[in-house]
Image (cartoon, rainbow, N blue to C red):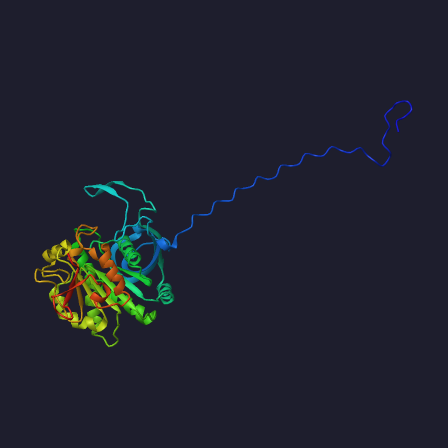
Amino acid sequence: MPAADGAIEEPVSGTSAPEAAAPAEPPPPVSPTPAPPPPQDVRQLVTVLYATNRIINPSTNEILLTQVTNLRDAQLGFGSAIVRIPENHKFGQVEQPREFNVAGYTLWREGLDEKKHFIMRDLHVISESDFIEKVKSDSDPGILVYVHGFNTDFGGAIFNLAQIVFDSNFRGLPIAFLWPSQGGLLSYDHDREMALASRQAFRELLKMLYENASVKKVYVLAHSMGNQIVVESLYQESLGIEKISLSELVLAAPDVDLDVFSSIEAGIKKVARGITIYASASDKALRLSKLKAGGVRLGDVPDTGPVIFAGIDTIDVTALGEDVFELNHSVFSSSRSAMDDLGRILQGIRPPGARTPQLRGLPDGTNPPQYWRYPQ
């Protein structure tokens, strides 16, 4: 109660006046949660293994295309790559940035765009043992070995195989055999020498797939000058005691001397259960090869029709028209009709008329036909 004299009453001993509450410290700032990376559409990703006899000078296991040389290595090297196919991909094309060149110099180049261009991802060197293990773990429903042709660089060959796999809907494991092409239109003589020098390396790859990785189904697709590597390697294999047995052999626009092939085709048929030749009368690159190397090429179609071999399916693709490289030399991979046919070959469907009804058996009235042709 208040004091009689009006003075303010002191607090009772043992108690104290309440202190003012200290101001609360501000909470620590909350870091914003980083946005998750955009999801990768796995449908647009193609994983490719490679074996190469090119010399590569990597500083780490991850390599740059600038570290790949045109020099031949005495030993096989191995690696893997992931190729991203653009959402706006057009069937049969390997979309790359546009560029403007003058006298061999690039003055302007379009920037990479995932929606428009093929992009190389995760290009790595791996050991031989890792390569074999990857093949063992992913060899069903089969292995597709692609051997590129003349005027094809390291990255271009990987892109080409990724396009073929994507467009043909191949479900097995793709492997690129990358021999040291110089990747230039004026390097035909160099490339031919490198192709001849790469036959042993290709045979080593095949033996590794059969003997070390125990693969049951191997399909080989050779394009252009790559056929010189393949057919002569397979012929040498046919002379051995332990023979390989390819499920399918596809010779696309084969830049092989016709007389040479005629002399060894019996041996090649011993190591390949099915053989298909894609030939064309409008293949300008093969015409150039005929002038440079001399002799009719296996992939050409003269006025009398393609050369016919018993037990080998020959398909005249002349009617499929121009291709994206303007040399009519990759029509098998740029035409939907040919790519659909290739996809069915890799499923083991034959003869050609059974898997691709639009093919016309020729000559008319023969049963079975001697060869097939896409109609005009």
